[in-house]
Amino acid sequence: QVQLVESGGGLVQPGGSLRLSCAASGGIFSIGTMGWYRQAAGKRDLVAAVTSVGSTNYADSVKGRFTASRDNAKNTVYLQMNSLKPEDTAVYYCNAVILRRDNMKWDTYWGQGTQVTVAS
Image (cartoon, rainbow, N blue to C red; front, side):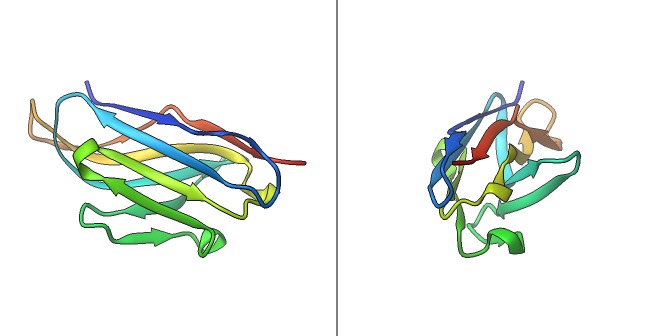
């Protein structure tokens, strides 16, 4: 089965940095867009997305502070978060559109979520 495993969340002071990682595994033929969402008060919003050729898209609230990247050889997407603010506090979820090897169907998968808390 396809799995997305995240790591790198935690507690950081305002102005600090964190790097999130998300590795996809399990019966993968190909991966399309990979991205990060966050959920703070019920609604899950897009933070950043990276296409298979490296094009990126960011939420306005994180532009200039966050950088999304991916390593296709490792099926891994990263989110470098700098100049963190208290309002960045949320559970961050990895997301990927994956073509499964067993049935050759595209589907969307989610990681389990990792907590990011920005507080002094």
